[in-house]
Length: 95
Image 1 (cartoon, one colour):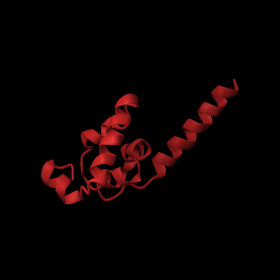
Image 2 (cartoon, helix red, strand yellow; image 1 turned 135 degrees about the vertical axis):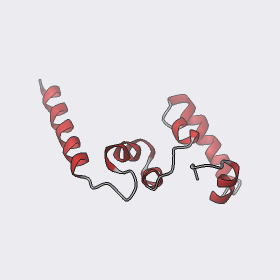
Image 3 (cartoon, one colour; image 1 turned 30 degrees about the vertical axis):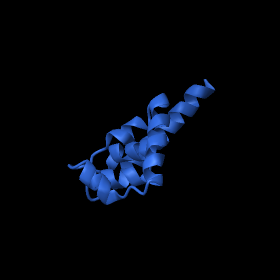
């Protein structure tokens, strides 16, 4: 019974927070909240500006694949990869 009550309180709090959050200039809202929770504030800010999620973002939430993608991101970062290089490598609405 305690678990049920805690779950209902958490769901009500989350629903109230998401319902009263003012959407940003672009997308925002409940989906922006989920993107922020799963992928972080930087990815959520880019999502709200109208950018799509890159396959590396999706890979980070898959348990084993997330470790590989994290190491891959670290190697690229250690090599000096910049945002402009990523935009040139992956054209479109990602970067």
